[in-house]
Amino acid sequence: MDDGLSIGAVAQRTGVGEGTLRMWEQRYGFPRPERTETGARRYSEADVERILQVARERDGGLALKAAIARAQRPAGRDVSVFACLRRSLADLPPQRLTKRSLAAISYAIEDESFAAAEQPIILGAFQQERFYRHVERRWHELARTARIAVVLADFPHARSRPTYPLEVPLDADAPLRREWALVCDSPGYAACLAAWEIPEQQQAPDGERVFEALWTVEPELVRAGARVLMGTAIASEPALLGNAATVLDDVPPARTDTARQLASLTNRMIGYLARAEEPAPSS
Image (tube, rainbow, N blue to C red; front, side, top):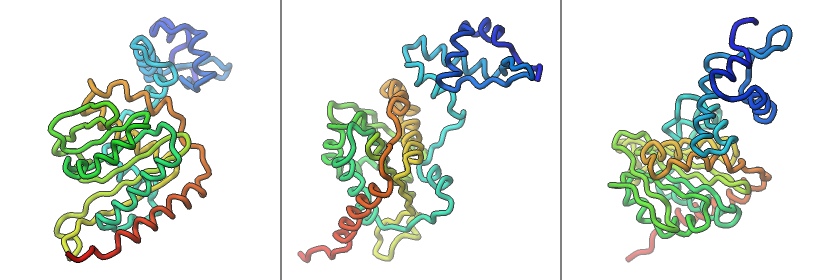
């Protein structure tokens, strides 16, 4: 191909030197120019825009690796963790679970985080503030050793407190207002749970809330869920969380024995689910 811009033309337009562009391509696979029959690089206008974006991010103090990762992301942004997992797990039907069962699975994931994760990224969507307050003490413990902890709900305003999760309000029409989501993402442990609440007329006969749920320990899918929650939090409170965008780029995805992790997590889930099914003590 003869169309496109030469590396010299791109360097002149972006202010990024030819040697730097070659180094980025060699080390980070960015940018990815087309090649002519003679091997000369040819860049598109979209390449130029992404290079300019990286240059701006670098001028703002962002690490090069994180700036490149940000520039390579798709323009669109998922706003539903459940939808994100549903696309990737199309062959796995969601499970209908009551609130008690969903809480049991959440506790199991959190317990594994306590036991196996080092400085994890902990993210949660709670729909309503009162649901979060019910487990706030537990999340305080999770946040104490986390790299970052963020919770989203219908909070009246954002709040940041030492050793507590950052509280981020959700707009009334935000898709996450219908979801129950939990993400623990760290190099040593990863898990993601996502569920959407079934409309009231389809609830359990006893009136208990019912959800359709999916969960996974696959590192790539966990990271995708983390990006949905973090992206929503940043969009809601950029002043509070502007620098948090780099956290997911700086932390490598989990590299663990997935089968062993799955077995350990499943054992915890079974224990919690068994207790959830026990009848409440009579008064």
